[in-house]
Length: 280
Image (tube, rainbow, N blue to C red; front, side, top):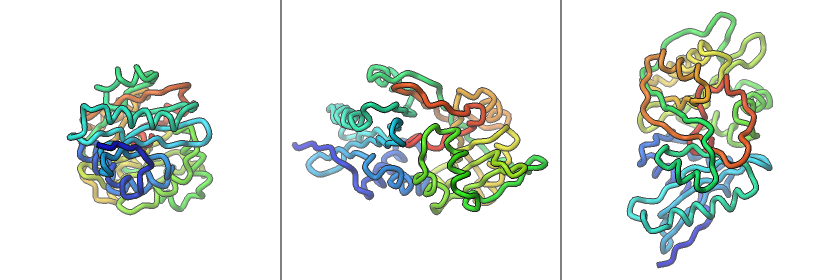
């Protein structure tokens, strides 16, 4: 049997998203369309006799950073080393860069053997959408009405690398809404809520404080009529974990943020929810 690894087509990236949904990772319904825009060459597919059986995303950001995700072997292709061969091909594409991933906790030891070190854990909290108003002096507006350079600069504070093409798609696609919190003319929060297979996903969720974060989630949930939401809260921000617990949400899933190389400098205190397990 012939096994080959190559760049995924746009249709195969959509297939990778379906595989992620089958693993109960609950990606947004239209996330894959933004993934393709982020780095069209950053998605690898392993094909057995021409049929897709393994995948990995190895998206390059700027000149020095990369994010690894969507590392999946189809269940009937597991235990044959095909996934690891796909992993090696993906890591080769990110050679020389700082590389990050949000992997399932059970795979931490395997990632360590590949040179990754643990930075923090992400805890997915799920629960009923809140219904609160914005704090005094804070306006919540559509993110698409904000000058894009301002939004991209704000996003970079919390992500650590430029991702303009991805960000433009992420706020604009169907089956989602994006909002920004503004106070005295300055951006003090940014969030996207997108429809998903199960609970509606919130990410990113950046905010100056918990009252702004919860107001953003509440506004987006009302706009999309979302009854249940899910946020991947970084354990590196302990007040954010306490904030999610105070909202009455329940931990349902955990991942490990790990890096090869020096982690980017970011504003961790304002990071209430990561954008995507697949692309960071």
